[in-house]
Image 1 (cartoon, rainbow, N blue to C red):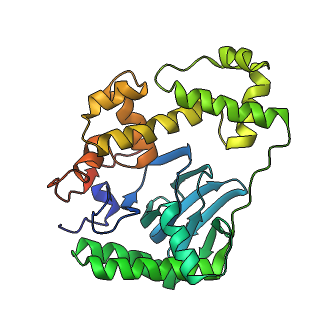
Image 2 (image 1 turned 180 degrees about the vertical axis):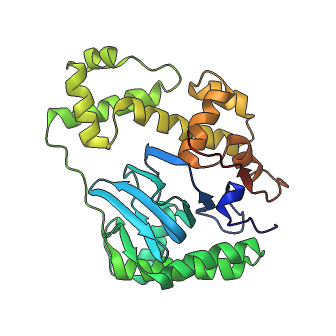
Length: 295
């Protein structure tokens, strides 16, 4: 693959891919200037090594600015946002390991008992950033053995330096129970969900109370969580070879363009580029777009 340019003047670029020889991991390497990630969450972990510029990350505890040599570590299902924190944007290499892979490495290399978690969400750690970037470089060069070794090395290092046990979220209130019930209903009726008023009535509460409880429990309001969930399911359909237009309607978006807008904002690349990287013989491509001046 021809290395993408890091000159912000030529526009943003991104590559989001998997390699069959490196199971349990998604990879994203990108340079973003105007890209803004809305509040969303991932099923697995996120390890983002900033190699240039500044990323501004919105986390439950507040907004963090992360520059070169900084590492962002986000646990599963933690809602967060991301955007450029400087005019030149930010460049980063990100790993998305599954919970199964992290569990395996934690069990082998740490004394943690329970679901492993990162106890810090942002750290300045140039060595770990270089290791994350090296995983990308190795797999891009076709060296799966080196990539797998480096991946396990950096995950073990971070779990031992910054690891703990993921706390369980106790269900203590009727609001939390209703929020979980609402999430189950939305998951079951993803393509044709009820309105907030209908959902609240079904659960015996008011729309405002349900929305507040849902945000407290899941980090997002119901409509934001629904969009996130639709994109997640669309990703699985695209990985299975479903055409983007069919995937869009299957998860409840009005058309392919509607899916594309939300997919690009949450995943960082368009559905077509995402799918090409995952289908056999799809080829390695870097998604590029021209950066235009802000209005």
